[in-house]
Figure 1 (tube, rainbow, N blue to C red):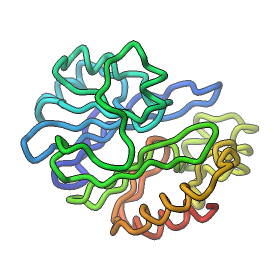
Figure 2 (figure 1 turned 90 degrees about the horizontal axis):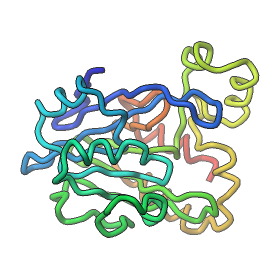
Figure 3 (figure 1 turned 180 degrees about the vertical axis):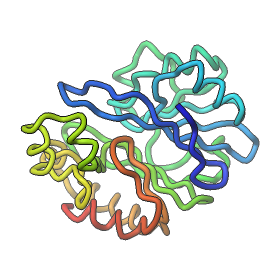
Length: 232
């Protein structure tokens, strides 16, 4: 496992493939160095000794972030390694992980301790799940968890069965569409806050778009965002 720099003070860590209800899913974390040198870690992946050593070369994790209630699996491992790190997440994550102590729930205003390098919005209106979407302004990078799943044909042929690959194309979670999972899209019974969140996301001057699962976008981020939210 290695860290990939994708801009000034921002890196990706590719994690292991996990089983999600019988479907193999790749995992990915984003690490940002804040102006004071502290590290902000989004959706922490499985913490190996190799990864811990690489992270330590960058600085000390001080903020561990769960963007939605499904991205929480390794928070306790990172917290054990760096006990002074603060845990962050939306209210849904806080309810799910009552075994951990979080800072106040995230909504649509970045905490002051993140030192002004992020904008963010909470995507809500679904009876199933909400998600916090982040914009790292210095690198012009939008960071999504499950609001875009963008699997390549190569990955699907290697890891998913034939019926699963057909399902992925029907759901629109493949390159060329990159939508949120179909069941989540159907669960937005109240679309007014969803549309408001979309407007804010599309207002960001994005160059890159990183998601947790699938092929991330190195350029033309604004056009990619317009496409993946075209179902709204």
